[in-house]
Length: 282
Image 1 (cartoon, rainbow, N blue to C red):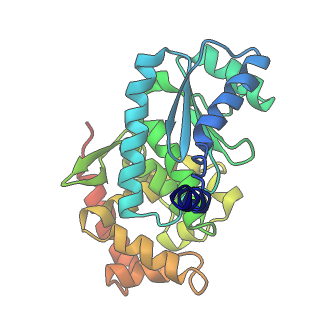
Image 2 (cartoon, helix red, strand yellow):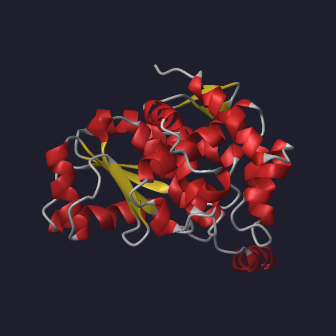
């Protein structure tokens, strides 16, 4: 009787095992699938690639391949640049062609896309891609929610410079690097035409100015300025120093000078333009 009593007390004293925490990504996919079906978007495949849920209409095999690009980009960018991650689950919509891309964006946002390639929308918590245009835009747009989380006060030249740098990228010794790409030709033409903004002007452009009439040359100038820093082994140091000093240097111009070790930025830009003029693509 005493033994049975002891066993009974011991059984009562053993804490009950708590149920495992539900996977928020799995729950998100269940809800997302239901919500999209209600909007007429069906025959979709879903994959969790934290901090994203990747959705595609080209079949599960195609989605698995594209999700590999997402996984690689996330790992590389977090390793080299970004401490903070997006604070909420973001959906990556990969549409197989221009027609389904336009239809899907209109269904999901109420508006037609402003670009044939893809974009990130904080308002709609998603990245929207015409994946038929290639995976470069996908990597480009992945940069933006990370910058938003990690460096929310980043000026447009840095945000778009990083995004466009990695829209043509590769792995070098376990690190992401930008390669020369299609933007080079336009920049070289602008150099010949003497229409490249000074680095002081570029870094001080506000959002409306950066995305204005000269957006093409602004993008390419920012991209190849960061490309130069990358090739000199200075890009990661610059990003981290700029993020740390942004209150005192909101444009990044002073930090850029310090990282480059340049006092005369006019002379440096002349040398940079000569450097860019010799680059090639492809």
